[in-house]
Length: 407
Ligand SMILES: NC(=O)c1ccc[n+]([C@@H]2O[C@H](COP(=O)([O-])OP(=O)(O)OC[C@H]3O[C@@H](n4cnc5c(N)ncnc54)[C@H](O)[C@@H]3O)[C@@H](O)[C@H]2O)c1
Image 1 (cartoon, rainbow, N blue to C red):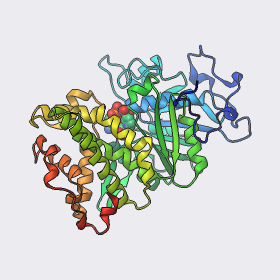
Image 2: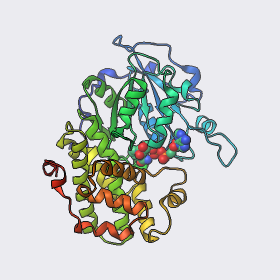
Image 3: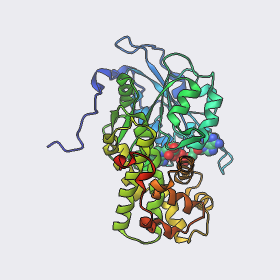
């Protein structure tokens, strides 16, 4: 009996693309780097793609695992997946990169999970991207400006495509700059995005979930990304709405801070559901005010409502915000992040500040009371309890002409 989870990957042709058995790595291979394939084209004569993942945290490592399982199977990709690692020295005195390559595990950010023998950790950013024509960006967003600067002029050239799995944005004077835009502007390459209800540790143990690829124009490129990521337990759907998909992934972290505060105040499920509904409404309004091209349907994809739910129920932003409220706002988010996340990065607080900068620059604070209140609380200007007191200041639609149609 088929189940709801037996759906085929949308728009993909996995069967035609499959590698024949003799082009796959033997399962006992322990020194992958010595067995690089020489073949430059797939069985249909199409140039093969070489993938590099830039980032190796919790999600970066899981993304590498997903990709590596597919590059082994699909003839349009080289087997090897290079993963750029921000080098760290472990308490044992060893380099993280050396340990990943020896054990095939990211012992710091994804312990206990084998990445796949064809994942090669590389601490040299320039070297890691040298021959790649498919670049997967997956670092905390605050490091992206620096990474892009280091990559200017170092990308292979024509035909290079990027995808960003990064949730967050840069704020410039003229407004928000999405990470996909930063990549395109700084490196001169097209950039899709992949977002969704994707708590990395759950995907690492192959529990079923979905994701959304946002693309700008070229559906064929979106489908290549879908083929690279899609597995029976990770179903990827393409949507022609880069900004909508990316803003969903970014803004839900602000709502997750609000949800965590509500948990820390022991307010219960009704309050949390209300916060999620109001948050989703502000996410949609903000996205559409920023980019009129954003589509309503995007909010019903995995990147929208599903990611919002999972992040407000689990996830690191919720967890740290809960601790913040339980401590009555007396211990800072920075201190709690360091204590509770062990090197992982919190996104919601910095995104709330960035969103607030956009709102205050445009005089829109009263139009977005939830986003504004989250920032005021995390900046220490309001107590955690303010998160449930904001019915006193309902959105003032009249502030921006026509904005009521976005709510
Ligand atoms: N973890 C998840 O469940 C999840 C799910 C979906 C999306 N994301 C998004 O993926 C992105 C990456 O998150 P993650 O979970 O892979 O990372 P992480 O928070 O687990 O790890 C932090 C990473 O940053 C690196 N780092 C530290 N200092 C650095 C520096 N100065 N320059 C460059 N890198 C540095 C660390 O080595 C580590 O790889 C984020 O935008 C996050 O929002 C995460």
